[in-house]
Amino acid sequence: MNVYEKDNRVILEGVSDFDPKHIFECGQCFRWHKQEDGSYTGVAKGKVINVIRIDDKIYLDNTNLEEFNSIWYNYFDLGTNYTKIKNKLKNMDKYLDTAADFGWGIRILRQDEWEMLISFIISSNNRIPMIQKAIENLSRKFGKYIGDYKGKDYYAFPTPEELNKATQEEIRACQTGFRDKYIKSTTESVIENNKNMSEYTSLSTDECIKELTKFNGVGPKVADCIALFGMTKLDTFPVDVWVKRVMQEFYVNEDMSLPKIRIYAIDKFEDLSGYAQQYLFYYARELGIGR
DNA sequence: AACCAGGATGGCT
DNA sequence: AGCCATCATGGT
Image 1: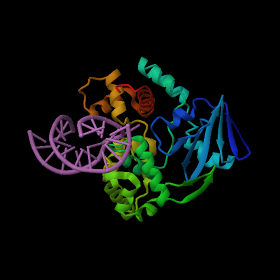
Image 2: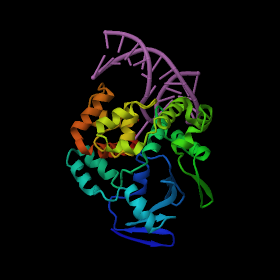
Image 3: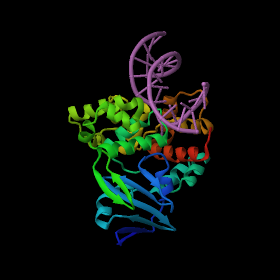
Image 4: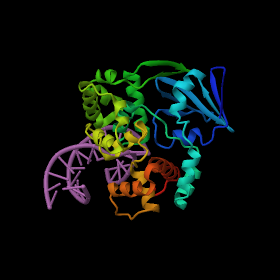
């Protein structure tokens, strides 16, 4: 990979396994929005950048080499060889062979632990466009103003301290629905116990999920997502409606319970479970498998 | 208007 | 531990 900076842009040459559509639409993130030119603009790590792929080059706009090295290299998980991961998964069965080719450019982003905690609480029994709206509203209301980019204002996701200033009513006014009380309670718990969410990363996967489930509004599925997307616990397998459908379509019986589907998948995919989940989710949702 | 979405919770066995 | 009924918002 060759990296260089030009005109407030960082350009990556020869990056393999990187496609913005696959990365930003495989269900792992909520703050990246497609632009008219096919690029994606999003907020992460308190910055706003724009990402587009043209042929084999990736353009990161509104940033520089220093930020790339300190933030984006890690955020886009560029130190991981996804070709190897895909090859292992593709050799397992014909379904993953197809799904990994379909979502060939997926990378699991290394996102903020606290932001994932609140974001996936909002995700419970909700629709993705509504989740995105609620997170944007919370950020606009309670997060720091980052700046203007191409005529639009952008706001960082609120810190625990910032979100703790919001009343339950104000949280609900951000379109969080009945999850307002979960967000309020979880934020208070983080503040009152002076919790540092990044410390959850050093726990084992089982311990991490067990601890996350103690937060109000965090059940098994949401804890799996927070652990996978916020704490790089790649040996877990969140089972949502789409993953349930694709698993029932390809691997298990209709009557298998969600926890059993999860165990079945982790037994099968082991330390690559999180990657497998992403390829399968993207494949299922893009193709509408199981409707 | 009924149905459903990246489910959680509490009560039951 | 595992299953089940109930809860709950906003969109289509």
